[in-house]
Image (cartoon, rainbow, N blue to C red; front, side):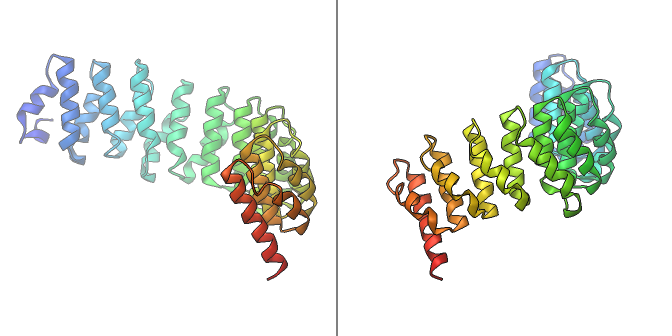
Length: 322
């Protein structure tokens, strides 16, 4: 360790001081001047007896990503101090180098659910093929947070082999949060898989949790599935305006003329965001039958709604007179 700070022996002394407050400040000072070659010093600080020193070491390691540092952070996920665990998890969530996955993967089956979840969160953005099987296995985890993170990994991977498992999670998981995440992840599904995906998404429109229904309405629009037009139109009557908003946006993407009456009715809803999305959807659909309803909100009290109405009217008129 001494050779790493030959030019600053005083800082090395402070890193080894008896007072934990001095050691903590020394870690902060080191983070300001250190290079990647000083990573071993931060790894050593992750084993410091004082939790506040370990916290700063975990945060500092975000700057220099190395397999050794990632492995040390993975171990810190099981630290006895909650703040240390949170700092390590946050740093791992910022990983960018795919090579770091090798240091994380051995911890994907850790005994602690919090560690399993944090490891999957770190693997998510790395998008390495090796994370496919651990994520698929984690869909069967007893902990809902772990399953939620596994869905995120699979969503980022966009692997065709995960579509079946995600479809099952979207319809059968006990956690609404997991079902919602799985429905969102199915937005990448390929054409060959759309039969089963469509059924799962349509089931999602009837889910007891409005958040799941909202996600299903949005994903159906992203996939631009014509068969979803009628169910999405029906979703404009959902008790939750958030679901109606997503349904309106998706119907605009589908350019479903059959939704014009329901979307026109939505222009009178009390929520301004829904009125705006309904107006924009009517503009995308381009049916002149919507012009009277849009004209009626050109002077809406919400400036965003007025803007959307005028844009929609211009779109419809432009389509009628190219």
